Image 1 (cartoon, rainbow, N blue to C red):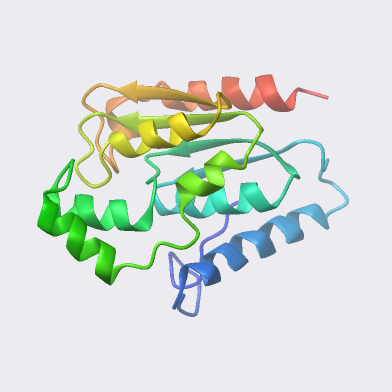
Image 2: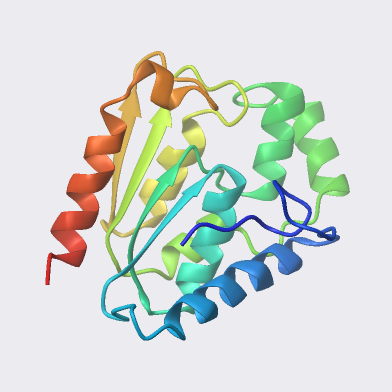
Length: 181
């Protein structure tokens, strides 16, 4: 099942808060689980960037998600904002500005610490939108449940262009953790 958050892609509406996006992902999961043709023991999740941040929060709340792949996720809302305006690591002024301007509830790194299921983190080391340090922080918070693959030269929205092998990596990961039967 593929879906867009409200206000993204072809979806209507607008998300005014990150809790709206979390609610959208939970609604999509509930719709998926309501189908007779879905095995509830074989639910995996994929999220890229913002989708990874939201996906981590949903996975922390919902045990039905057995495993997940997150591509270029960020570790916290403030860290993402600070990286956007101040690089990696952000200079002091950018971190301070992000700390006072950006609320940091539903932090992906806090959600990661509550998840005890397998995850694969994919991140390019040339990502200037969300630097790979975000995935390193997430992996450190995972208590060993997340495998991190840093891909040399990979950017934020071009990881598949520079590393087409990640599609097979994801297939192998989901096959290993969701099985064939």
